[in-house]
Image 1 (cartoon, rainbow, N blue to C red):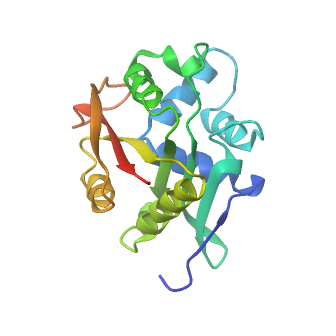
Image 2 (image 1 turned 180 degrees about the vertical axis):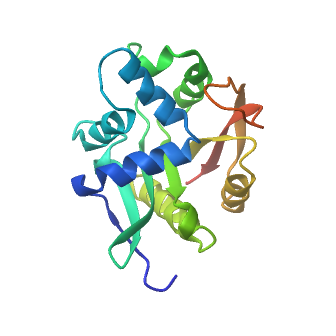
Length: 196
């Protein structure tokens, strides 16, 4: 796509970032945000997700995201950062379906971590995901990280093909625990590649 640009995300992108984060996780973000609604912390799942993306202190929010756009329209986004030491009080440890994902996150401490990478359905097939992934690799290398990692479902063949084309290989896996929809996924996979 000739007129595609990658740019740092801004607060104005928070709604797109929330939607794309949910697309990247095949609905697990919305499931997690809906839990906040059920606990009375929020009135709407996506409003809660958007607020999380707007949070200037949030590691997975707009400050660490890159947006792919064409003619002013957001087509995809990626969020990546150096994975910090796990917080024992992190709320993501608790919901049963997210525990395996959190365990794989914990194994990525110190890696450059791709938290989410997604492209809207209408923009698929234009190598936007590849451009975003390459940008994550470049950021990790520039930051001096030795390794880049991410977590993906074993049923996500398109993503696995892309990640494999960049030398990312499976480092570990955890069983997939269904949340609110049927899925062909059997495992969450931790993929990594060396950067230096």
